[in-house]
Length: 257
Image (cartoon, rainbow, N blue to C red; front, side, top):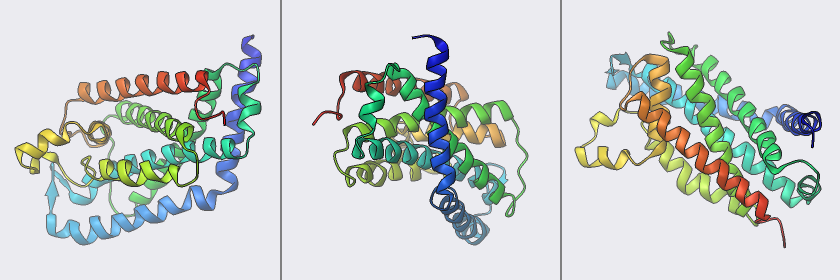
């Protein structure tokens, strides 16, 4: 299959995904903005006044990177799992899988769509944060690269969930019982330096901790973990999930009844 046809296939999937996101913007873009505004008001304004500074910044400034990356994680994951499972449920994913397109192109198209939604929501949340505090980005390249890599990792994770899901209830289990706890315990609202040594060690096994702190370093210049650790964890997680998704698609897992 030549590169032109692969590009047409890839761009068609991406265009379909972005059109879907923008068509239902009231469900995909607005709710995260409202939710994050409430976080800024409750945690930043009300609780933040009692906490004072953290890491050399006001509490409001400190939680901005965590809330932005949290919104990117949940929306990249949510877009992928809902979109791909919806295609499975509607039986039209089968037409795509039997097309001449390689599975890695199909996977890349869906990941790009999820990445687009994650970035859209991340930008909206960042703009909302400017109504509450002032942020000066310290390392723009690090901030953007960690953001993109994190969105890709959770888009791939959403694909795994969607592949194995057999009913709509199955796509809510992972976000509710695994993704949400890991996100809230990943240093979004606090520095792990405040935790007892035992819980610091436990937290070190949470991959989201490295994503939050990598992004926080890019934005504020402070982090609880080294930058190399952040990049290493994100890269390894991304490679493992990419080849897992490709393997599952090649086998047709979850596609055959």
